[in-house]
Length: 124
Image (cartoon, rainbow, N blue to C red):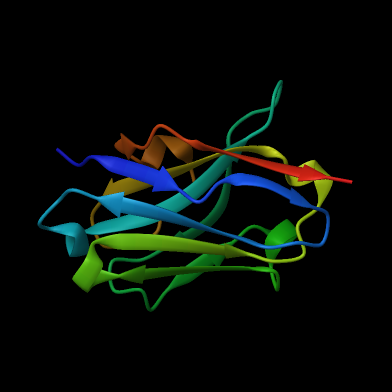
């Protein structure tokens, strides 16, 4: 069982930055691939970025490439998402998720554990 707690959400103006954090309870944090998803009202949950167990492999949605960076710190059992040049259409609840195993998953169904979500609001 893995418990995930997100933090760092808030309101920012378009073009601004936020850094989201996801603290994991598992002692075996390194045994999980991790991902950040987001869900806007009336839309499906979508993968924003994912990172392998080692942190060496990453995946980004095309819409965030070059602006978002996903990292993980095994010593702190924490994953991060640095978001720069934010756009109003990226307003959503952002969720972190953990996937048992070493490889990145690109579907929500690949992930077994989810945080409660943190709201990100980008104003124009």
